[in-house]
Length: 297
Image 1: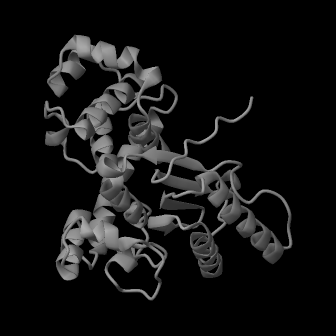
Image 2: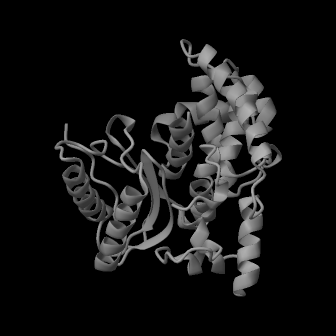
């Protein structure tokens, strides 16, 4: 079956995730990470796309790209092919380096840009890398002006906080919900809590179930909101999308009735039933939330 072509229009915003084949470490060393960023810079100059955020981990990379006239497929084809050729040459090998097709989530720029920047920059924290938020291969360091790398279009993002640069950086750090210096002991304590959740997930792996409360906490973590906000009954599109995502995920991963979900989210049972019945045809922005959760899972 032919692959469905990716949606393209000038100004489209994509969260791109590219992984090593079989989850292998294709950016393990500093040289590999530096080379990948050099290639991105080369194609950014060629195709004039905007890069709002990036994080290059050992076996995968996150890129937040806004395209102009050139489709994302052409941009990523160039980046991936050139890196593959150079990587294989350096390792004296042939074959696939990346999974056959990168993931690309089309996102609503107005609703999700800031949350996606935070999500990408916090990846090293989730991986418990000692440098934490100050991970060298993330664009966070560009945002706080503690690196010589100049690759991201951070001015636009910081401008959403304030026109004053110093104030904007301070507000950005507040938004990231983390201080410039990281308390490693605090990260370790958080890791213990998350490990407990992972153990619960592992023990339920055969039936693929988890508690509704744990699911709600993880959806909040992915979307950057708190549990009180997710239960607010308002018409703001972002909160509507997140509630719908929680309903759809709860039916897949939790043993919970429509009545219980309706009570928790302050919605009618008929509303829950409607969301579930329409779950196969949800908007792209809702798929983004669901796939982000399942990608972490």
